[in-house]
Amino acid sequence: MDSLKILVPLLTPDENKQAEYFALAFRLLSEGYEKQTEPAPLSIRMYQDLYNKAGILDPYADIKRISTEAALKALPEIDKIIEPLEGIARFRACLSASIAGNVIDFNTGGHKPNLEKLVEVFSSIQIDGFAIDDSEHLWRSLQARTGKLLFLADNAGEHILDIPLLRLLKDLGWSVTFIVKGQAMINDVTIEEVRGTEIEKLAQIADTGAWAHGVPIKWVSREFLQLVTESDIVISKGQANIETFPEIQRETNIETYYITRAKCPHISQAVGAIKGDSVILRRPKSNI
Image (tube, rainbow, N blue to C red; front, side, top):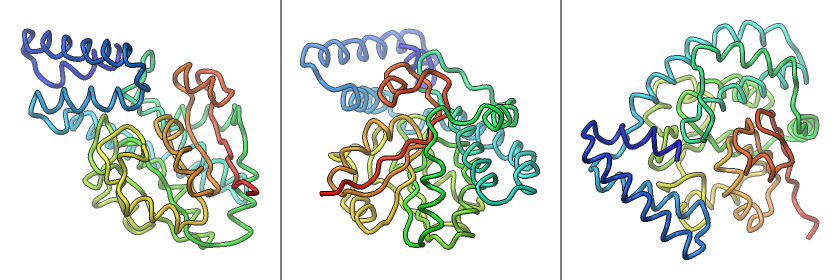
């Protein structure tokens, strides 16, 4: 409901039209409840129907621009803190920056990002650490070898604070492919937000081929799935990817690390965290 309160006014300032869009959303939610539709596909259909009805493809464009500007403003201050660090301390600071970016989320009920406090969020993560902490596993894995790494990006603005981690991955010798959304569903990062940024020098850029939350296997492109199978390790950002990528991971049996800020009870409970926790969660390859 909170996400609809953000979305619908972005679709139109007309209050009559807003009422119409709310009615459509509630009808779809009711139908989904009756049919016991899983939350992810239900939400995808609802957003797509609302966007199509309004004739708008990217209602979050201004929010994405403002978020990116805020992250670009914060990055130099964060870089100053990271620069003197070495080894795993530097690595964990880069992870902290990436998680600080994950607070830039406009689709989670009860979560309101303060774009002016990104440096403070980063600093607090540095102090508090990760409630679920598989960072040492990831560090050892990255140091033990090199190869192809698939980086599943999340939101616009957040991608800017992924840059310190991408720099480190490149320095370690990994070939990184940075995956953006085929088309934004909320404030997702797409190729438009990546163009002209340092990310283009640090990684290859590809997209999911999907217009969806996360990377549901039924929606992503064959090209994306091929990139997964060709990779040696996956770093997956954000809550929607925690909900959707595990099905792909089971199919491909690829070592995966989920990096996120726990922002809603559903995801928090699923990973064994509480709201507000910073999470580095390892899902290794099976022995099968």
